[in-house]
Image 1 (cartoon, helix red, strand yellow):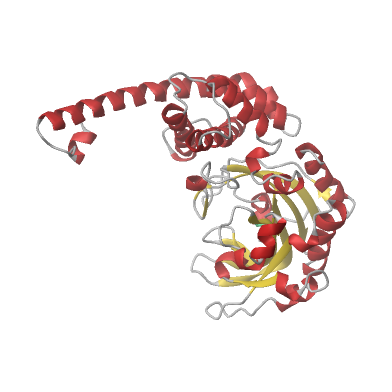
Image 2: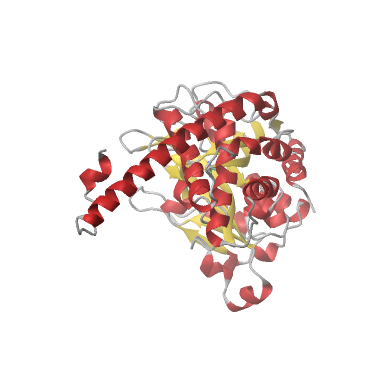
Length: 405
Ligand code: SER
């Protein structure tokens, strides 16, 4: 079985063997792009190349990119922890072609990597193609469908609408039709009872998208119109944690070696066991997810603060503290003690975690302590208001009383 580390390496090796330049992940925190606070996709660092604003350095590139989807067009925050396959921060494995190869090779290599190299069962794979949009004046992506037909039977090639099969970076910017690859990880019995094709894009936790192949052809302008790009671009993104789940035979991203060392450490520090109580499990997943986001954000120079990107990070940290407080009975800072476990899982791919461990621990500890104080005070005040209301024979606390001392 491939470990997470081996999986990440195998992706890079495969695309290096197809003459791709392997580049480092860009920072997760973006400075200097007014349309975006955080990297939400692997293609962000190539936006100016895609738009033709800067010259192409390498026509073929691949990497593993740290992404964060907690604001703007791509925002998964509320699902995180409650389900088993969304994250705030995640790694996106991607390959790009800037004016070089296009749909045919992108599809053939995706298939070769998943089926020939990783040995995923092709019977469990489905793909979707853009069905077209009259409003945009765009036709069905018959070209992509034609390439998929070489590998998949017709009932595994499904049409998808603009929401799922026309990828856009934000309200403006590069975009184009896409083909998503989905995998059905359910048991053989379940697969025999319910056809996997009926569960694609239906939020089933074991029938999930793993890879998105975007065929970038347009730039969405601020007025909503589409301009052709100077050169056609391939932009693919594969969810690393989901791929690890599929390869490790698990049904939750959190059961893979990407998250288990962190979850086990949370269990140890809180005297709980993962897998015994639904609410505690959610809390442990929230904390395991959020500690990654907060730590990587700090290494990228974005500390929690009261404004903009810093405030998003502070809110994520506070979300984790709240779950720890409410469901794991944590009254003292403890998340900062998870750094060694995080380093164990990601330190060698991202050595900045090791270099900045002391700073990360210090910042998180201070934030935890300060928010725990605020939380205690707030809860005490609310309890007092509730008692006063009860003594006055009321069942409700007025909104205005909940907001004032
Ligand atoms: N940009 C696409 C995505 O984020 C593919 O990389 O899904």
